[in-house]
Length: 67
Image 1 (cartoon, one colour):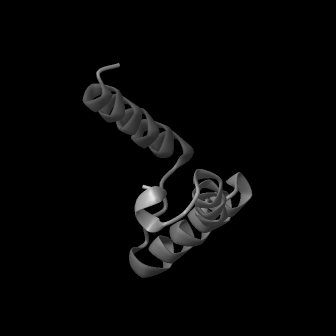
Image 2 (spheres, helix red, strand yellow):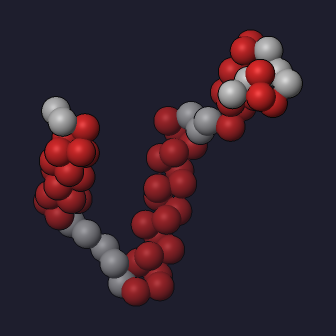
């Protein structure tokens, strides 16, 4: 992919790294998204509901990755 874009692997990876969010940035975006959903349609899951949703997502990801 790097060669196809005329970049060295190092330059390609550096550019890719610039586009990745830090864990703090991801958490901040998640908080903003949850606040927007709550304001828009009242969506405010409990901690237990969030855990159930996380478990379901983990189950589905494991299913498609064969784990």
